Amino acid sequence: GASDTQQQRDLPRAEWRGWFCIVASIVAFIVLGNHGGLVPASFAVAFIAALGDRDNRLIDALVLGVAMAVVAVVVFWWLLQLQFPLFQWG
Image 1 (tube, one colour):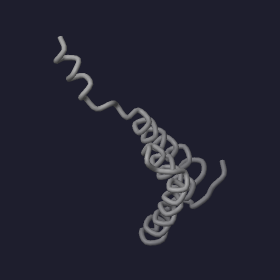
Image 2 (spheres, one colour):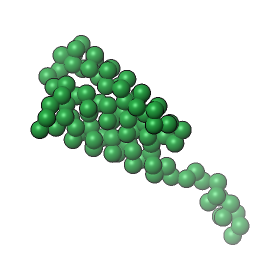
Image 3 (spheres, helix red, strand yellow):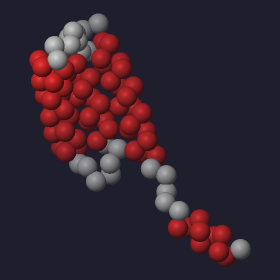
Image 4 (cartoon, one colour):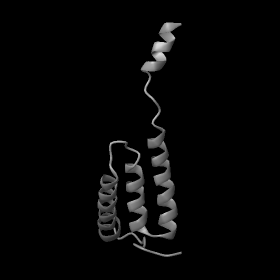
């Protein structure tokens, strides 16, 4: 009865935007990693995932994406010397 309705209202809503952005960021990383290189792939994964948070503004996501791309280059390409091209076309 009424208690079931109240319990349904108390349950948190599913965050479909967040889920979609997380999955889309992983797909973007795979596609851009294969066809664009480390810099675009690491920018895209952070930028798209950050858009899943409703509190983030577009500028916040852009700054996070740029920062993540820089960290990825320093850690994976320079320090660990992974054979992952920074940029590639094709």
